[in-house]
Length: 263
Image (cartoon, rainbow, N blue to C red; front, side, top):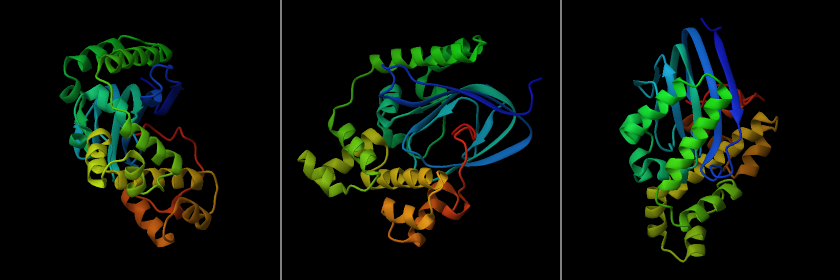
């Protein structure tokens, strides 16, 4: 019987995978009593390749699961022993891995085989038979590289707009992005929704929230973070933190990234 609690090992994605994956982490968690977490919205899609006890995520019981980007927090409940690998995909990594428009996955939690079919079962069988965490991470890296590289590529315009939003911390307007691309606002919103899973204004909110969260965790004061991240005022910032993170800026304290799997 493994010890109670959470243990994690992270790896840097390979060069081929880096445009599509921002986090690769092997983990084992074991709890005698249910642990409930509010998982914050993030600018990426979470993929859990796991075996052992299922967890409750967004009201459904799942073991290996995934979904798209979201513009609200997700509640999870974990009990028992589970282990596997957590992957955080960029929107375009998820788009190529799953082969469906990302707008169909927004704010959803789905069993892995619903999207990946037999590939999911084969990957999980190989993962379960690989005892070393470092070998598991290398295996998942290799499997994802092979599937993503075989999928159709994404046209460059929306990834370019996404990168500009990330660089600005979510502060660029939809109008300025559309003008830079020579597109209408309506066309940009439709394409962004398909490729990212959120329209650009909603994606910008999630990106801005993530930046504010990191600054607060680093010890910055609330007023300066609100001003730097472009919130209208602290009340606006409080509302966004409740919707996207089930928290408030005043409850955030500097903490380790190893606080638990993203879902």
